[in-house]
Length: 113
Length: 111
Image (cartoon, one colour):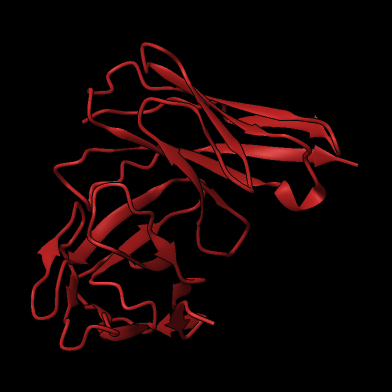
């Protein structure tokens, strides 16, 4: 079945440590996205990528970095510069067209040790 | 940025229709209206979208007001599996990435 796979499901970060969240899709979508969700709130866009080797900052990119070396993969690194990283992180992909829906993975829950 | 307003929560009985409202009074003429839903600890799931006309699919119907300042998601026969947070989102056509998420409506289904 086609879809988006995020791993790990749960992740713990120590102070001063960088961690990388994985996102892989087999939907052949050009566009991929990373969102952050805090309890009881909607999603906020961290980064998005329209095509391979290109990505743009979203509304809350500070303390995060991404790469897009392959169409299927869009990993997110939460750096030590992100002072409040505890959240639910969601990856999505879509066809790059105005009315196409975004398809989401099941998320990674990041906590601080 | 255009925003949406939804009730924090709604309750409905199982096997009855559910009407979830959304106000978007500042919507522009070319913004698409999208609905997603999210179960606890899962990623959002696309439900339906529309521009001006009412839309139907296997999951739900979307009724859009003539002035486009409000819309209603209709679940024709709610089941316990429909209990989720429902998000009404505006999507400008000139910015594919820009989904403006609110806090959504928590739908509670009573057996």
